[in-house]
Image (tube, rainbow, N blue to C red; front, side, top):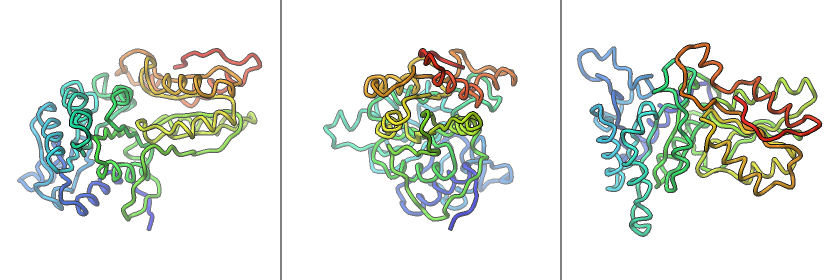
Length: 344
């Protein structure tokens, strides 16, 4: 049975279902319980945006409010995973990774390798990413490329409620550490989501729209901007294929290359800063593995190489727009072709 729910509700539902299914699943983070079960319970939000609201009433002390010390509770989650539990740790804003990055990339990501494959670390670290929420520079970054760079970590960034539920269930069941990135501007977006449990495999991109003229690849919020751009391009007779990556590590190279080999043109959209991001990674891979199929230079549409501005008018310009994506597509279709460049 399907019904429309928001991405925030889908994440809550995935946590609830997995905690019911598996008693080793625990959830921990700052204010994820938030006073539930105590005087003043009406004010218990379940995290800064209420994603875990109501779970304490169902699962009790398997949800743990932590001190304001990311290094402490992320380290505890990694240790608990190595000892047989399946922790889901909420980092709140993924921007706070700087406080606990050693526990993630030097410990969790390396245990399987350091101990000859005998150690497993089934920990999920959830965190909000992305701009457009008026949360200023320290709470608005798209830091997905930093985690994707680290071998041993799996990185997920859903663009809708259906994918969020299925990918989070898969993440909790996976035996490797998973960084689960939730774009805060997508929490309220609703779509059809089955009530029952289901898992979406990692490394399988979703082709949202078929087209033969150009391939647009993206993830997270900018998937929706890419779809808007594709809809406007139809008026000019351009049919764009839009690919939602869903997972960034592992990444579905086959779907990307097969699409480019058919269309001959590629536009990669990434909200992250332009240097060494997913756009540059994908552009390099396609240039190396499908260069002969390209009819024009690859275009990268990204945020500028600056901190996220707090002024609403500037923040709106900061995030890649449907117009900037459409403009990049038109450059690849120009008679002279397009030289590689970065478009904000």
